[in-house]
Image (cartoon, rainbow, N blue to C red; front, top):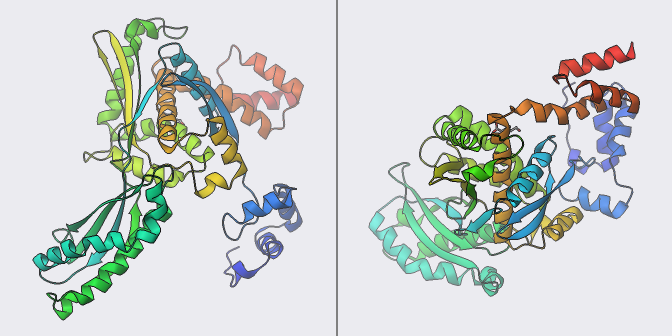
Length: 438
Ligand code: MEV
């Protein structure tokens, strides 16, 4: 049923649930029971979660799993992952173990600059605006001192502010393009507060700039907001070893494997249809750690996909080569992450995740996240270029199907035995369950 409602936000949680249940469900009490089944019995904890967002009615569980044995820059890390897709954690763990005996992962943060912009309209003489900007620039720093004081103590702050003329693309459109260092915080609030103060200073100072005409004084600020595109906040993750050392149970011929692997990456470099799926596999690892550590996965996704198109075509984030008998597989990606502030100090499981990771700095977390993405990509390409992806996927997926059918212990044993020697597909699993139940 489609129905509008007014004053929904003012209803109590109980009233909201009742409205949902009676409006959308034939059996309202059953719906209420399901919604409430996911409430936490610890009222304080429930309240904490209720207050993360608005109009909360319940909690939506996602599994939290662990991928151990990640050897990163010579140190072992155990990586917490939050994701709903089966096989992802298993694949990460398998890759981690594999590379731990081949030198491990190397990761480096290349730079960590964040970006924010004040978008404004100015009608008039551009040279006068440039002169105004040079004269006003120190004021932008001065008038944000109360906001930047603490960040400066931690070694961060505003790095630079530029005036950018965008009128060739859009009439009267200019920007204050500012760069920031936000140390261990992702910095969204800090950046946005600075930008809103810049906008204020811009408008006030323009009114007092003597060279401006009345029309020129009337600078119109359209908006002030950070950018989630951070092409100068880059981390590099890499694995490499002698081609012959790639050999293992499923890789009998390492030269053939390495060549096919490099070819698979090349395909993703030039073919957008493949690149999107290739990068999706990387994001399986990245998002899972980003979520577990309380970071903003939408920001990370948006920024990374923009970076994947930086040369005008959507392309692979990772690259591979064989040179002088050495196989190298690497990736450079933008990542704006925080290990303080935001959800990191509020969500009890985020605190646990950060503790498991050894309380990383934002730079260390960038390295861990990038490595997990690369490991995930390696696992996917290894399966795709050897056994095919379905073998591993269906083995994991079979559990979901069995749960869907509330399979008994006995049924599970019989089914597992049967599929040791038969190809698994959704239909074949369902068929077998049904035949067992006849
Ligand atoms: C599935 O979630 C991810 C893969 O499709 C990635 C890939 O194809 O590289 C397996």
